[in-house]
Length: 163
Image (cartoon, rainbow, N blue to C red):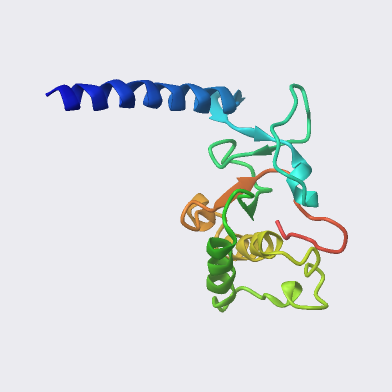
């Protein structure tokens, strides 16, 4: 019985510390969409240029919203979450490129979206192609919780993401 109490005495403060640190690190915003208040995480656009994902500053007008925000928007894109490991993203590339309606030539060497030559960038391009051609439903961007629906066009340079 004493061993169970000791374990519980250690586990409870650790669980509480984890929850508090998670709450402190998570920033969210509420927005009104069609008269309803919805919760959405707001991120800066810096990850599109290969930088680390950062939370947007208060009042920043160009932001990416999670798929829990404004689902009624007609201009949406699907990108890979920046925090996902390369192995899971490579699986998304292989899966998407195996679909008949997805043309992956843009991420091949010499293609308009080949650079930057990294798995996250290539996965974002083909996941968006799949999402656009499959109907633009939120489930078309799930990819086992590795996709993120955004409302700001992630296109850059010659690499154009279709809407």
